[in-house]
Amino acid sequence: MQIKDLLKIQYTPQEIAEKRAEIRRLLISGSSNINSGEINRIAVSDLELLFEYYDAAFFKGYFRKYFPGKLRFSLSTQMTRNAGKTNYLRNLPGLRPEQEDYEIRIGVNFFFNYNKLQRNKAVNGIITKDALEALQLVFEHELVHLIELHCCRKSSCRKERFKTLAKQLFGHLDRYHHLPTEKEIAASRYGFKSGDWVCFSHGGRKQTGIIYRINKRATVMVPDGEGIFQDQQGQKYSKWYVPITALEKI
Ligand SMILES: [Zn+2]
Image 1 (cartoon, rainbow, N blue to C red):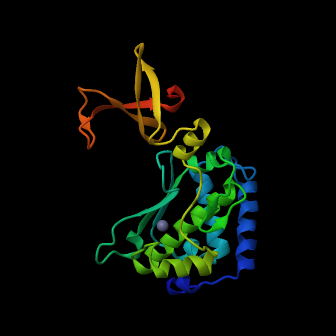
Image 2: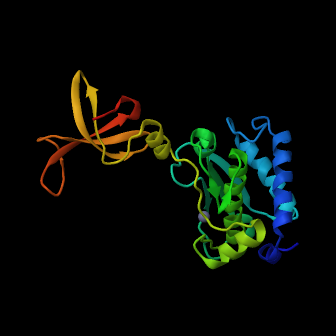
Image 3: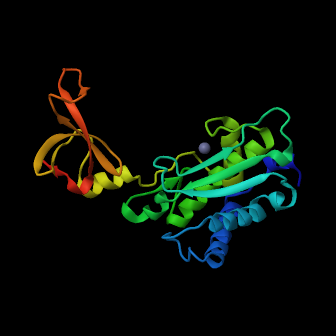
């Protein structure tokens, strides 16, 4: 197996399903954090294991045998939209293979929160059955970025080459995940959405305003003659960040 062959690997849907299921079994038995399809704990070492299994099953051990560069994994609790990300050292002209340097980062909250909403949760166009399957699919997407970067020095999941590779290697049908976001969980749990009028108390005073945005906390715009924010009608507001549990609907 040579570097140019990575772009040609192709598996049937059945082979992909079998390899993915085998990697799941291996991870559950090899990890001290993940022991079922649910994910409540995860460590960088789990991503290292996952990579080792994917390399063996899908890339015929290419990375273990031939990849001379650096490859690291990390976990983030700050990612609110993307569930995975591949960072790399910009490809300077004359970069030698041993100088290649990649980092695959996984946004862990998407997997911890997997069961917080009951609905279909597709990743890359495939309906997942649990958090572990979702993690595998997100990881696979990042592996396609890694292969493209390693072979072609450029990668974009919006482009044809990526889509073709993701399809032939992993059977991915699109590049999005529909995993619950903090915003969606908050909105569904408490029934709040942007544009709702709400009140909350602060220092014994009741404040009334409109929800502008919901993340972990809600951004509430409170009509305020002294406020520095102004809408198109000239109404002034002050901006407040309020825990969702402290809001009341009006
Ligand atoms: Zn991507």
